[in-house]
Image (tube, rainbow, N blue to C red; front, side, top):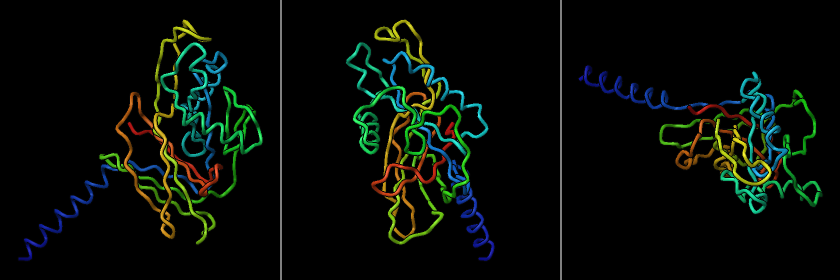
Length: 240
């Protein structure tokens, strides 16, 4: 009987270890990581240099731990000569919500937003702000679990997680509009965007990601207070 029990226990531990071995883990440090958003479009002739700046972050040692980049392709250029296949009206609405929050009546591309604020600088500053600890696990079934430990625990604050799957090295031949005749390359392209509230008390939640899209190779996750746009912590990384 003892041999059977030992066998069952060893089998159970092996299965548990195998389950966790299949998880991909993304984890922030205690200091707040910057969330850098770029609003862009294939129909905009001034956007490729801004996208190249974002692409250069792939070789930056601060990537994912100190800087989490996302390119949101907006759709208000689509009727001006070239429909951007990566554009989404949801991303346009995201940019418009920033503009309303800042008291600005217009939107434009390319536009960088750093930690929920319009960013016109050339160099991303360092940060010493405590952002709490964010741990995210992604399993082989594309179930994502989010656990957040805020820097200042509160029983009244409701935290919200936001998850974007990202495309890398996406290329497109543009045949009309301001970039006609150019082959454009895009990195950190938002292919999907999901949000969910974390459970009060545990600050934990799970969600299932949509099926992978073309070129999906990374993920970005950030935390905000409910009904707030400014992130308090972010993380991300390569999924393959």
